[in-house]
Image (cartoon, rainbow, N blue to C red; front, side):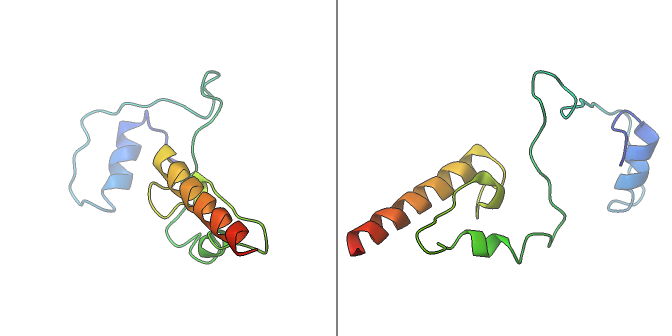
Length: 99
């Protein structure tokens, strides 16, 4: 894990992606340990959810899932929560109409 207050550590990490980049300063806040926020959102490594996430978007019998953590757009944000909530509501409405 990189300490966001350590300019040199941040610079070293960024140079993996942008060789020669110079970091002149950093701004950091520890959201996880902030007593007012009590945490932060999830950040998944690329490819970590490609197997499970598509399955959670599909109904499992009469169970439909919604949530920002597996949204197709706006992953882990309010727009993702709205998108999956609206999609699940449409799917439930359709399923009830067919029963």
